[in-house]
Amino acid sequence: MAFREVNSKMVEATVVPGQRLFSQRGAMLAYKGEVSFTPNVQGGQGGVMSMIGRRLANEATPLMTVEGSGTVLFGHGGHHVQVITLTGDTLYVEADRLLAFDGTLQQGTMFLGSQGGVMGMVRGQVTGQGLFTTTLKGHGAVAVMAHGGVFEVPITPQRPVHVDPQAYVAHHGDVRNKLSTALGWRDMVGRGSGEAFQLELSGSGSVYVQASEEKL
Image (cartoon, rainbow, N blue to C red; front, side, top):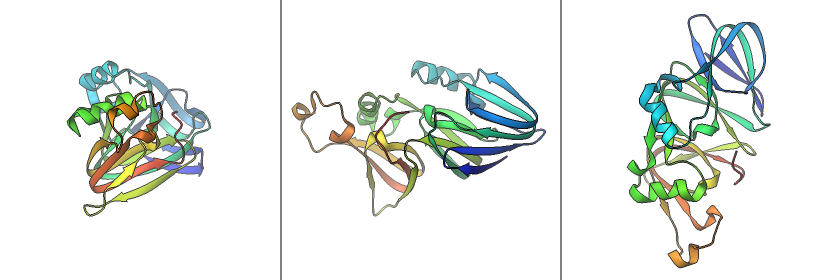
């Protein structure tokens, strides 16, 4: 399956017989050819447990299965779109950031508490994002959405990257994350902005950051 960036806010996907892709419902803008769109109740290839995990996290972003032969234009809400190509690794991405992705990718759900312990759980409370995040693994392409465009920042063992949690879009590679702050707990009370916190990502990989602190 091939994604082509038409402009900063639209992508075109080529659909071929025998293959499928998944998209966020309402993301189809136009299509040519014999293409079908079917509501998906299992959330890709993650199966029942993936669906249950996302429902518990209130992240059951509805998906459509796209099949047939033709081309489809995708976009949503005027958000900027970035295509990320996976070559066997895993992408960690918030569910509501997903615009479309190849059906060849295996979808799952990861509890953020397993990366960074309690601080990983706190991240969901602070940013308004869930305690679970979606994982996509394998070979294929993913189109993600963001405000104001996306910038890829390399992460190396010698140089961790600190990100405003509300600017975080996704990451991939052998990366661990934890939430940190230079302020005391009393200083944080009453603060609604994520600027009191920093999401520290360490290891080897990349993090995708949007040019805004706005939520989708």
